[in-house]
Image (cartoon, rainbow, N blue to C red; front, side, top):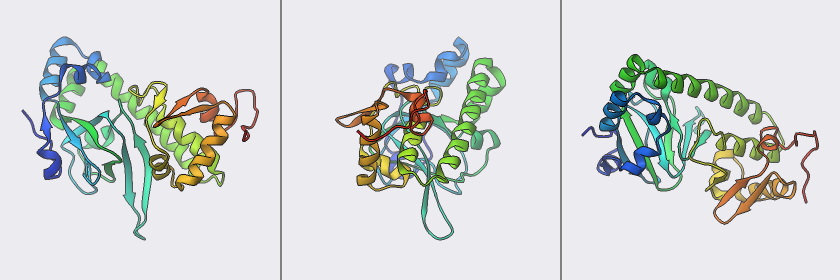
Length: 248
C-alpha cells in the first residue's frame, strides 16, 4: 500500500479506500477494467484535519488528490504576508492535475476548513493512466478546461466591488457539476467557511446570502446552501431574464 507523503499527522491516518468511497470517485468509473483495477489498488485515503497541509508551497508533487468528504481551500501567502484564497474544493473535486502533469513543486497550499476525507493517486500511476487510458485523458482535459474557466471567472470577480456578486459567483463555482460532482444540489458549508473562501466577514456573507435567497437563487438550509438558479449565480446576481437580484 502506498502512503500519502504529507505531514506526519495526515500520513499516519492513511488507509485503503472502501468500496463505497471508490464508487464515488468520478474518473475511476471511466477507466477500462484493467486500468480501473490498477488505479483502485494504488489509491489511499486519509483524514485531513484543520491545520494539516494536503499540499504545501514548495513541496514536490507525489500524488493527485481528490475530496471524498469535507471542504478544502486552495490558497497562498503574498509577499506582504497576507493569505490569498483562490478557491474551495468540495466533495467530488480532484485538483492539482496541472502540477502533476509537469511534476513541479506546488505553488499553493491546500488545507481543510473542517475534517475532510482526502484520496490520493500516486503521480506515477497518474502518468501511467495518461499513457494507457483514453477515458482518463478525456477526464483530465475536461478538468483543465473547466479549471481555466473557473480561474478566469475568479479573477474577474476579484475586481468587483459588489460583495453580493462575489458571493454569488463563488457559490456558482462550488456547484460546478463537472469539477465537483459530489456536491449535487446542496453544498454543506457554513457562513464562516464561505467567508474564508470569498474574503468577507461572516456577517457580510449572511447579508449576501439573504439577498440571493430573497431573489430565489438559493435556499439557505441548516449547515448548507441549496441552489435553485445556478444561471443566476453564475451571472453574479443576474437572472436569465436580465433581472438584477435584489434583497427581499
